[in-house]
Length: 338
Image 1 (cartoon, rainbow, N blue to C red):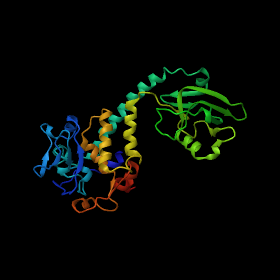
Image 2 (image 1 turned 45 degrees about the vertical axis):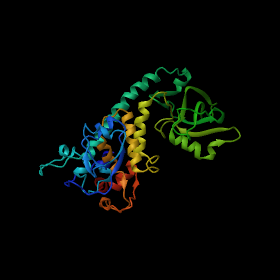
Image 3 (image 1 turned 180 degrees about the horizontal axis):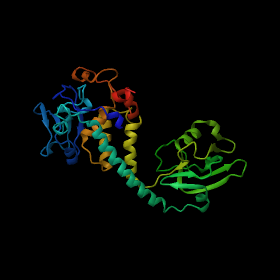
Image 4 (image 1 turned 60 degrees about the vertical axis):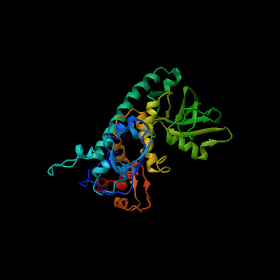
C-alpha cells in the first residue's frame, strides 16, 4: 500500500474548486472526533462549515464532506479538502521537502493492523496448543498457528472422499472444500488415513485445482485427489479457522476490501468508504478518517480524465475503483518510472 500513496502530498491550493462532495452518515460522537477540523456543506446556511467538538447536532445525520476522494487538485490535496490538519502537515519552508501525507496515512493504518495481527497470532497459538491432535497426525504434520505443513517432502497424493465433505459455519468462501478426514498416499504404498479434530480446508491453489478440474474428481469412487510434492509447491497444505477469532477476521476484511475486487467493483465509493470506516472502528484501529480518504482517493480512476473534471458541476461522475495492486500501476507516478 505504501507504493500506492507514496506520491501524495499537500497542494499549495487553498480550495481546489471541486463541485463534488463525499457523503458520510455521522453515527456517533466517535465519528465526530475522527472528522474534527474537516469542512462540510452546511445545507441550512448554504456555505462550508467546520466540524469541531461542539458539532453534536450532526450526530444521526448525513452530511456532505469536502474530501481527498473528490478533491479536484492535480498536485496533491487542497487545504479545504484536507481540513485543519493541513496547517499541521503542510511544510512551509521551500527548502524542505513536502510531507508525504499519503505515506503517513498508510503507516498509521498498516502499523496498527500489523500489531493487532501479531497479538492475534499469539492468542491463536495458545488456542491451537489446546487442540488434541492425534499422535499419528503429529507424526506426519507440523502445525503453525492456523496452517498445517506436511513433514515428508516426497511426492504424494491427497485424497478426500466426497462423503467426508462438510458444511461449516466458519467457512469464509462457499467454494472451499471443508473436511476433517482425508488420506495421504506416498507412491504405491497404502493410503494413510488421518482424522483432524478441527475442520480443515486446503491451500487456495489446491482448492482451485480440485474445484475447477473435473479430472480431480473420480465419480466411481467419489473421491477428490491431487498429486503434489510436499510443501515445495505451496506455502502450506491445510489451514483452519478458530471460533471467535473476531479481531483477526476484521483485519483480514480490511485487507480484502482494498486488495481484492470482491466489494469495490460492485459498490460506489461512498459505500466502500463507509465499509472501511466500519471495519477500522470494529478492529479498534485509531485513525482519523482523512487518512482513509487519502488511500481511497488513489484507488479511483476517472477513466482517462484528470481530477480537474471534478470542477465541472455538470460532469457525470464516471469512475472505477481499483484494488491496491491495480491502482499502483494506474495512479502511482513513482512506480511508472521503473
